[in-house]
Image 1 (cartoon, rainbow, N blue to C red):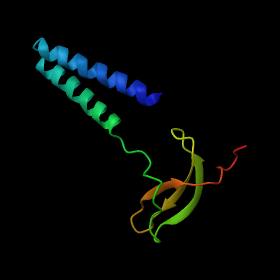
Image 2 (cartoon, one colour; image 1 turned 135 degrees about the vertical axis):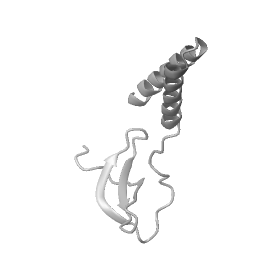
Image 3 (spheres, rainbow, N blue to C red; image 1 turned 120 degrees about the vertical axis):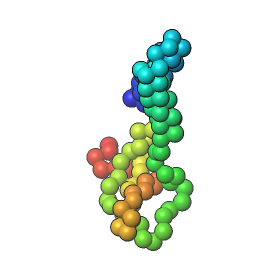
Amino acid sequence: MLRTLLLVCAGALALLGARLLFHGQTGGGLSAFGSGVVLLIGTVFERRYRSAAARPGAAWQPTGERFEDPQSGKTVAVLYDPASGARRYIDDPQPPPGAG
């Protein structure tokens, strides 16, 4: 829902900027158009959870965190790499805490 709203607003901003550019308002038009396009591209290509198909290597440690991914509806477990500080999300067959 929030992603859709952001896409609509970013598209409207880009269109407003294009219209301003068309009418010779280069300063505001370029700023609005550029901001809208950057928001559109960022939202469309945002990185979601990494693929849960492959388990990370031995350096990855479970954090104990589990939750239901709102997009897929699957339970996801969180792993942490202490060397890099990166987090990974993998499929977990157990339901998250507090799930009925």
